[in-house]
Amino acid sequence: MNRTPTPSDPPVLLVDDEPAWRGGQESLFSLAATWESAGRPFALACAVGGELERRARERGWPVRPFAPGGELSPRVCRCFTRWLDEIAPGVILYNTPKPVTAGLLASRWRRRPVRHVVARRVVFPLRDHRLSRWKYRQADHFIAISAAVAAALRDSGIPPAQITVVPEGLDVAAFDAVAPAHEEFPRRAGCTFGCLAALTREKGVDVLLDALARHRRRFPDSALRVAGTGAEAEALKRQAEALGLAESVRFLGFRSDVAAVVKCLDAVVLPSRAEGFGRAALLAMAAGLPVAAAATGGIPEVVVDGVTGWLCVPDDPDALAGLLNRLAGEPERARALGAAGRARLLERFTVVQMSEQTAACIDKLLAPAGGSGDNP
Image (cartoon, rainbow, N blue to C red; front, top):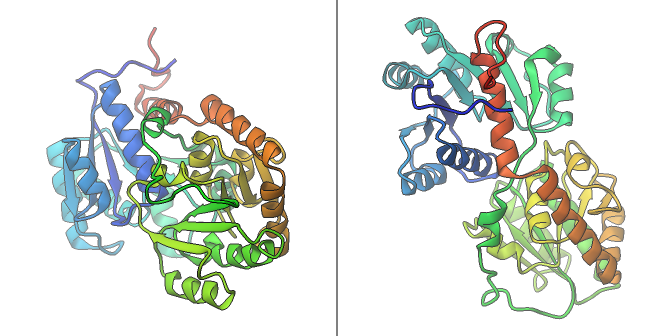
């Protein structure tokens, strides 16, 4: 049972230096919102001018905006020094990796007894150079968003006792309150697939375009909506045009109303080559939609093959096209998969569960030696 937070608890400083709004930023925002409701003290340090800062200010949260810098940026170190004095956090929770070094150096210089917790969201191994090895040895604990991410941390030399798996969670009530964007995306003949991802190589959107071209030979009315931004955007648009998909694929760019978009889809596709968790699957599950995904990283921990969606090997357009064919050709089964996904989300992947598990991890770190951190 989690300890009930009190106003005298040392706040947690949440740190994120990513100006873009992606799954990690959405997750941190949801965590903070839930902690606010529970009365758990926190402060947020985030990239100046980014979407996370904008949304946090709308909520009236204590925000410390800063300009992101390199790992050894003196400017970022000075920011941490100031925050340590002003906030006196008991824990610094790093949602992105670069600020970790500055936070460690500042706390040593100020001799502050603060715990350093690193949230890890990717399945890539930790970088193997001197600075990386030093900073991760100094971290007190790691929160991995999936067992796959935890395995990558262990393979990089992090002791298992320093790793806690806390799956991502979704604010289902907030999702349910959003109206579908049917004016922009009216109902149409054929299956409308959605891909919600950063447009980078590891997300595999190029694989999805190849798969869609194959799929449309059997189901010519199918279409795709891609929500996200990234370095591969222009190359993907050129690929879609070369495949004859210019009329059937819409690149939506960044969407602040992604829930409204998801509610206008028939299925969600995660074609990733590498994926720490697959937060887009949670949006699909909340909407009662089936998921077609590559069985890589943490995705199989979220999407149960044949129960809440279908999985295939990664980086295989033919295999992915086969899943699209099943979704379009078996609508009743697809609806059953979507309903099962909604039930699984409510059972395992809510924002309340995520926030409580994160809080329990932090309380354990702050508990006196031999204490549990729980209420008697």
